[in-house]
Amino acid sequence: MVGYSPLDEVTLRDHAANYHYLREGAPVSLFEGYDPRFYILSRYEDVEAALRDIEVFSSAQGQGPRYTPPSGMVCDPPMHTLHRGLVQQAFTPGAIRALTPRVEAQTAELLDAVADKPGFDLHDDVAFPLPVVIICEMLGVPSHDIHQFKLWSDASVEAMGAEDPTPWMGELEALGGYILDQIRARRADSAPPDDLITRMVVAESDGVRLDDLSIQGLVSQLLVGGNETTTSLITNVVWRLLENRALWERVVADPSLIDRAVEESLRFDPPVLALFRTTTRDFAVGGVAIPEGAKVMLNYAAANRDPSVFEDPDRFSLDRPPRKHLSFAVGIHVCIGAEMARLEARTALKALTTRFPDLHLVDRGERIKPFFLWGRRRLPVRRGDA
Image (cartoon, rainbow, N blue to C red; front, top):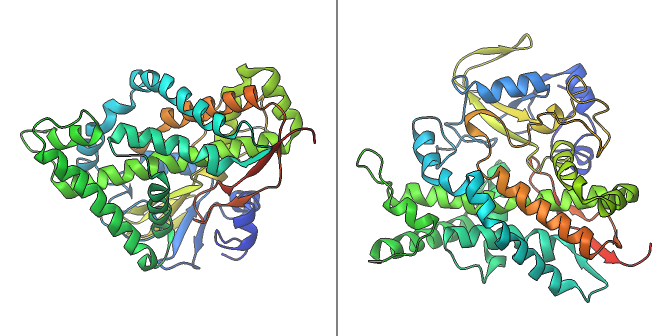
């Protein structure tokens, strides 16, 4: 297909630049500028159907653009069912509600640290440390060196999207070794702490316990997934509101709009623009034949701008009627941390609009690197009059 590349500078700068062209001109397209090449689905109905059809669109070879072994929750049933069940209880609505006071306290602590500064970086000072601290506490790993966790997290997602992950292998091995040390410490402890890692260590299914490498994969996914999506969600929603000052001022004046702002940000700027599946047999979508064993990019972000589902989809609106966006996927692979991400984003936005109603953008910042993710790795803001 000529005319669209998820890797070109136009698309990296504005992820939605060519979605209309994709949906109308090539809703099922083949991108050959990556090894392995992959197909792209862009219409809402096609992406949603693929997410639900795990028999054809499999996660057994990873959810990134390369072929990788199954790991943790990135796999098909029954392995997926077992692994997800081990951590599901930590992310139920009741469990998330119980974490609300801790999220609020951590947010307040972060804003206290910048309260006397005329300007700060929203990413570095708020959006990044908030979810990292919370997921570290849930897992039971020390959060005092959160910058090391961030390096490991960045390496993990960059390696996932790269044709050659070799440059990041040192960081990935360090992360794996760190997690294995945590697992082994709990196995050796006669009274281990009550945290997520311990629960995975002692959990049984039909008399079988997970081995260390299986737990390592789960913990790695939670540590990375527990911060990347939320960090980008916080930077994205604040960026768009401050970019259109009238929207920011509406939220300042009416905090009941915070939930709408977060959901509209998820639709308009999904932190995960797309994930991948591998076809288990020859399959046709929209009259296009996709062969067995092909990588397929499920373009959540393009689906979220589909005018057959969302009216005036290229406008960020606080008045949009609720409709089901695909930013957290659907089906068995719906994001396990979706409600946690929402809680942390709502809490951060409420605190920022309450304490710093005079917040302004300094500039548009800088996007994160992986082509299938979307967020600001730098977003400088300042206080005071425009």
